[in-house]
Length: 500
Image (tube, rainbow, N blue to C red):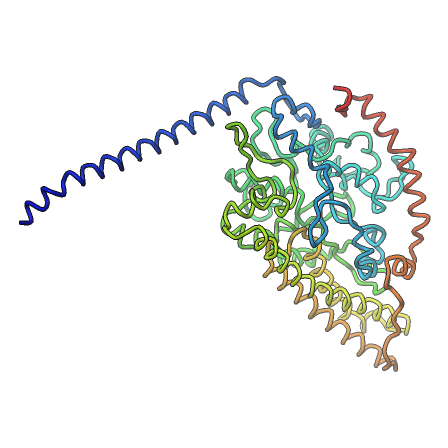
């Protein structure tokens, strides 16, 4: 009986195997065709170039004939129309939104001007217009070091190659105004001959070396984040030479950087009110990103901020670097199956939660600085104030490390909240210590608080003459910047799209 049943089943089994085999052959054929097509595309790109590019070509327009799709999407970084619940791609005056930040940065240029960042195409324009770079009316008078140009465009690796890295840093910001004129573009991240991703900024290479690693060992998927990490990181300038260094000697954590800074007794500025030696965090985006779930699952920066596009059988990265929320179907929904509305709200929920503790920290920490100023005015001495200043330094470092990281509240919400909670704890303790000092000085009442409810009032309280700052910058923009551009064009540093 069993033998007859097996004989009756065999034809069906044969047909099943036949169709499975046919399907497998079809899939393999499609895969082979796809691979062949991709190789043909690469061959076409590599061997049918219209323009041969060698060396460090800082003019992104030169790349356009060879890579028209990538170039076209790159130009779209000039767009500032995207808006979300928490800012967007246009410049928003953060100091106007959060006047306590003026107090937190009293004594530093960020108290004059701090706006949300725009797209890569605006990098040169924004640094020229920022009040933080001052109003240098001649190359000799530029108040900021040349190091401030480091992440603003592909002219920087060109100049580093020409001058030497240390010599590039050791100059004034205004000295390179007619040289660094092309915004962040192709040569910042790509080898011009092969278009392979590459690191062009020595800070990242040296940062890896400080951790005992070699950035050249990174895999391609890692490079899709590391080219971003050349600039979206924490760093500092040496006070004597302005040499740029990543504080990664103890790893890429917030505590590791703080330990390094403490070991070399580093501070960016002395707080004008509390006299605290402050570490100004830059933008540790990469560091916080690597602490989050997406990085731990192998997702790169480019996966979300430069998603792939398939067009006419060609697959390429969208170089319109922007928020993933601007294109959820091409970013979040590649991995997540929820609706766009649900995914967007999930992001907003994390950001709202982060905002709650951020608001508390900024209110508490700015109050602590003002109370410390009051204690100094009442006659406190350095020994009495040392515990206060230590806590203020630690609290502000943690606050700044969190808020200066673009997207940190989403990239790594758990780490963001952890760091912010430690900032709030130290701000509370700093206020307790100030109260103890004031009690020793015979003052037990509440410290009178100034009206800092607006940016204008807060800036006036810390002694800024913003009318003069704006007038000087206006004169600089109208007189010096046009001369820089004129010189750059004369030296063939700029390609005008209107003249092609």
